[in-house]
Length: 114
Length: 115
Image (tube, rainbow over all chains, first blue to last red; front, side, top):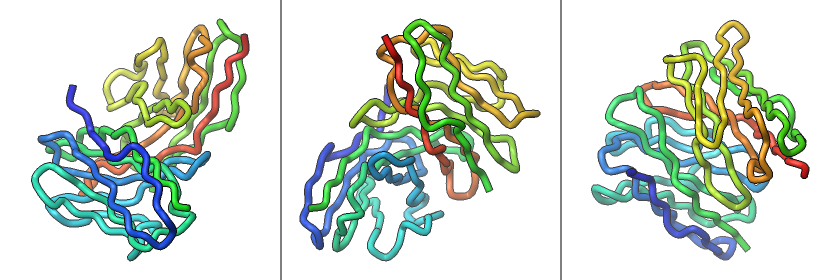
């Protein structure tokens, strides 16, 4: 069964550093998403991406964050100048060719900022 | 705007007892509804989904949920709890828009199963 793959599964970075979280969505999907889950809290929507541009973003997704689809298979989330409060699990998701298929989630990348 | 309310941040049941996790949603259009399970330090696993077909939805591991439009509810049940069911459960709602399929999650309910 096709699945969304995220790498790395764990990332530790020093405060102030830049990190890039990587995702390989399901191959024929066209919509891509990032979500965040701070430890012990609920999963929060960050951003959706379609046709090489952001289609929607939450108030959490400020100038510190950016997303990119650098090639035909990867979808990345870049966090510039990381802060302690960026420590969280980050989930990538993708959905299908129409707007009427659900999103499939990856297993997440746990980011720890020290 | 869509939202999800999960009633009870913690639920404790005995092994073999009925599991009932409550979820109410708010949506201006017919929603898609989901239940996800998350084990400690793991990702999200889809238990089941409602996509406007049958109101009784059967999922994995013996879980099922009933969509009640009149009550705007989508409660998750399992007839007999097993120790391995201990986890965090998230109800979620989404609908298609121009941005795709944004999913809104509830705050989660942690299920404890006592021996």
